[in-house]
Image (cartoon, rainbow, N blue to C red; front, side, top):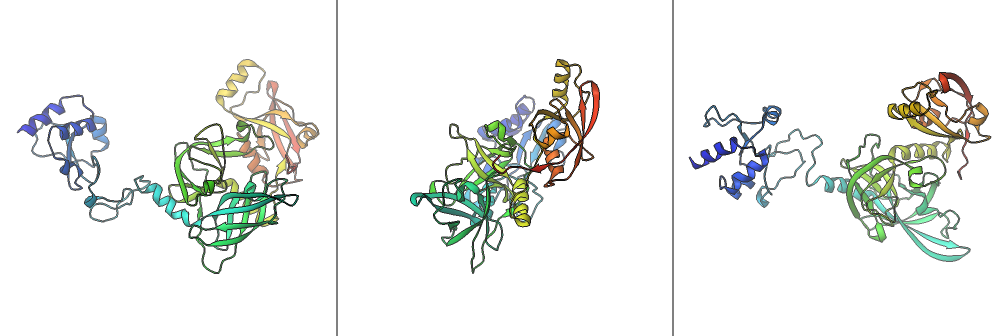
Length: 429
């Protein structure tokens, strides 16, 4: 009777559902053993919107009178308060219920999610050590990380780990590769692209090698959990976790010159030696290659998106180097808000909903010869409507010397069709 009166009081209060649960526990409605037991059902008060959304998962206690319409029971497999006792500990996110049966648990995030993702990729993460020298003088060793992505011994890493842009490597392209299980191999630098900072190292092994699966980075969203793995400060098998802070951080935002690049930004702890290590999603798939951090700040790490890395690897396989077409344009993505602001400042600005604004044309470049002007808005490229710089880059692909037509809008809605022939970009740009 005491319990019923207490429930009635709660049902007439404005307490939130989980506050009500804690209040029930504090009042002795059920013991701590009952709370942590995997077999306990908890009686709580629910607001109408939440009750409607969960009505198929809740049970109304038959012993309550009709006017107690807000009181329902949470089945133990649906909600749990507090920590499991050791005897009842289950793997959260494992997709198993209390009876050991599989249940539908798509995208569950539990206490083992990060550990499982790290365990999946961990054996394929390696330490890379490179001897440095300058004019025959030893300059110590560089330490970095890498990921075995193919059973034939192909290792993905950073170019700055294996190539020092002017410093001669005394080992002449040879590196030491140490695996998580302690095995040590001599690796050979097969390819390196300094612009993207991606390199490929190859090792030979008579025994099977663990590999990591490459995922996709275009589905990542700010707030998604990720894991950074590698060997910072020579500390093998180091794992840090965080979230994706930005999915398209531009190189210009970081003060980096040269051609446009985009990075994944995370708040994972990244330190010297993490370079070349994998950035992993909760499914245990590589979604990026850790490349750098901001020294003057914490929680600002950057990785090359794996979708970009995959294209670079394809270039390595097909041509032995990365081919990049160059137009000689600096551009800006437009959206409704930016367009409205530009039209407010200049009534002659073209009436477009989307497009790519040309902010600068390099003198003597293919775009200059084609007749591009600053303030042009590219709305169509090679017969395809475009709204972002990335779309233009994807359409160009690796086409060098092929004529492409672009439709641009100019002041007072003048339309012009321009023919441009991309050239190969200077690798040092």
